[in-house]
Structure formats: structure tokens, C-alpha cells
Length: 253
Image (cartoon, rainbow, N blue to C red; front, side, top):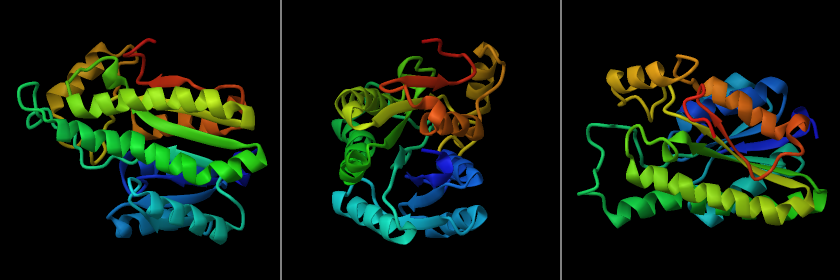
């Protein structure tokens, strides 16, 4: 299915990487749900920048009923089912190397919040769209990961562990859902320059990343968004269960 014919939900699309992904899909003509958790004003502006084929919908992706309602609204508004989900939302986390909790102070509750924001959210969105995807023999689930669990430049214990678990989720779902024409993949950027979530990242950390990255540059949200489009496009139709690292070569997997 061409991207212009798809109905795409991008979670956490009111800012940062989510906005870049939503705009990338919108620029090719896809019908885009700009999902947001709290920032409706930003989501509305993102949708307006895309045009008539974008719809802002508020939903906490950790809440199964809210996700199901969002999927139903999207189907009703666009007149066809959701074909593509990008699990991007980042709940209650900032990349702050100064105030992060270290190994002596991290709590299980911190891990639990990130598991809920990563794995539980992806489970909710996947299950909400699964019946239609199976019926239509087409679906694209694209999870946003991180290169930090392979190369923890800064040890964000809870966040990186949650994303590592999301990779396990990705591969198990890919194995089971492939028979229905559904692909499930992960796109993992590094610390992106610059989003709301990474705005607290110090200049020194970004300079370190740039100096040890083969392309000698810190990856941008737009560069990651381009790879998300690949997985949704016809060129990615034979790829599933993969984690593609998009970080200028910092992590070579």
C-alpha cells in the first residue's frame, strides 16, 4: 500500500520526533492522526501545518480504552481503518544527565513508568488496530527505540531498559503477525538534537556524541523520520522484526 493511501497514528506527535514523523507522513499525503497526551494546542498546530488530511486526537496511550476510542475516531473520520501505527510517545521522561537517577537511587517505580510508556502503550495500540489489519492483510507497526541500550553514553537506567524490552516486544509481534501481512519494526535514534525531551542534555554530551560519531554529526528528528517512512513504504515490505539504528554510525549493529 502506498503511503498516501495509509491512515497513520503517530503517538506523542505534538512535539519533537513525533512532530517530525507526523509531518513526514503528511508531506507524502498520508492521513495522519496527531496523537497528544496533554498539549492539545501544539497538536492542533501540527495538524494545521499538515493540512486537511491530519486530525489531532488526545489519548493517553497507557490507557487501553482511550486508545481504542482514538482508533475508532480515526476510522470514522477518514472513512477507512488505521493501517500504520508509530509508537513514539515518551511519557514522563527528560534526557537530563545532571538530575538523572543513578544506580544508587533509581527505584522500581521509575522502571515501571517506562515499561508502561513503552511496552504497555505499544501493546494497547497494536491490539486496537490488529483486527482491521488482519482483515485487510496489511499493517505497519513501527516502534521508536534508542541506541542508548546498546551504547549508554549516559546511563538512563529506566528509559533504556524500557526500550530494550520494547525490542523484545517488537520481535515477538513480528514473528506472530507476519502471517497476516503485518510488519513490526523498530527505529532507534540516539540523543536527537534537539527536541523538548533532549533540551536538558548538556552541550558537553552532544559534543562527545558528535566527536565519536562517524558522520561527525548529531542526528536530527527529521533524519529519523525518513527511516520511519521507509518501514511504512513498499520498499520495506519484506522487512520485519528489525531494529534499525539511525545515529550516524555511532552504534554499528
